[in-house]
Image 1: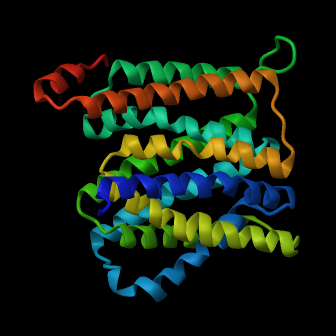
Image 2: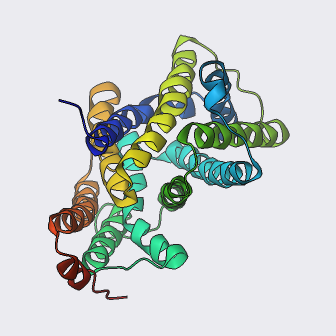
Length: 307
C-alpha cells in the first residue's frame, strides 16, 4: 500500500527533529572547544555545495529564488549565530527547549504577514510559553535576573520561527525545495565566511572530536536535514504541523545531553520546561481539533479569532 504524501512528510519531519536534537551535542562541543560562532556556521554550511553534484538538474535559479534564498539564508544566519553565542553559558538541553519555544510565535507571524487568524489556543500557548521562559530566569532562592544567554537564545528562536513561516510561504508559491535549500544554505555559508574572516580569529582547536562535530553538523544537521525539512513541509502543506513536529527536537536533545554530556536540571528549569511543553501541547491540540473538522461551517465557527 502506497504511503500518502502527508504521511511521508510527517515521517520526514520527525527525522528532522531527531537529527537536530542530537546536533546540540556537537554544537556544544565546538563552543566549549572555543570555535567562534561564524566560523562554526561557515564550516557547517559549506557542505551545501555537495548538493550541486547530486541534484544539479533540480536546482533552477531565477531572480525570485535568489531573493527567497537570500531572505531565508539571512534568517538562518541570524538564528544560528545567536544560538551558538547563547550556548556558551547554557546547557545544550536548555538551549534546545528555549529554541523550541519559537513554535508559539508561528501564528503571530502568520497573522502579521499573511492575515491568518489567531485562536484562543494560540493565546493559551503563548501565555504558557512566556511563563516558562520567565521561570527559566529564576536563580536559587527567589531572586530573578534576565540571563543574557537566555535572551540571546530567545532571539535565536525568533529567527527559526521566521524561517519556518516564510519557507512555507515560498513553498506555497510553488518554489522547489531543492532550489530553496541550496540557495538559503549558500547564502548562509557566504555571509558567515565574510563575518568570520572580518571579525573572528581562525579556530585552532582541531582534533578528532571537533572534526567529527563539524562533519555531523555539516552533512547530517544541515546538508541533509534542511533538505528533508523543506521536502517534509512541501508534502504536509502545514507550517504549524511542521513546527509542532520539529518542536520535539528538545526532547531528543535532552535525552542526548543527559546520556553524553551528563547534564542535570534544576527545579526552576524543570518547571520552565513543563510550561513550555504545555504551550506546545496547546498548539498541538488546536491542530488536532482543526484536523477533525470536516464541515466547512464548523471550521468557520472554530476559526473565531480572539486577536
